[in-house]
Length: 144
Image (cartoon, rainbow, N blue to C red; front, top):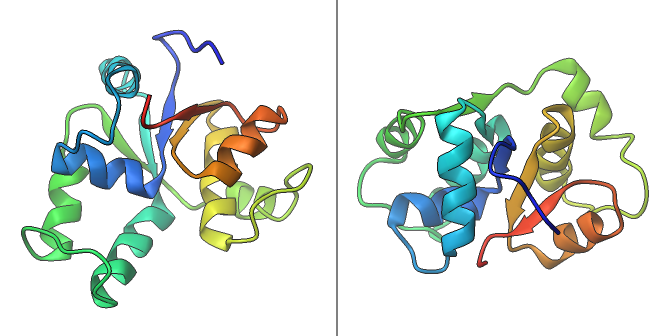
């Protein structure tokens, strides 16, 4: 998929974690897309991602370098990164997504957020990338 640098982006939950950790798992092209979107004040994190990160920490599946609340505050204070609210249109749209979409409610909300903002979803989730390849959401592989 070709994505121009002026596109809005939504970071999947793991993409936000990788960005904050400076992980090499987040590819150079993905970093460029995020930076360009942030410069345009159009880099989004779905509200459900805050819950997902907190749950991963609570279950011991994710270790952070500080309290999860502080970590989220730091992430959301990055220049140009905005929290996309979980408002009624996104919630309703998450139940009406076309095609065969991921069954995980959090992933459905992230996809609905990307569609609501006409944004590119940056993810390494193979099911979401496949959903994008089917034409239902613009998706870019985070590792690229």
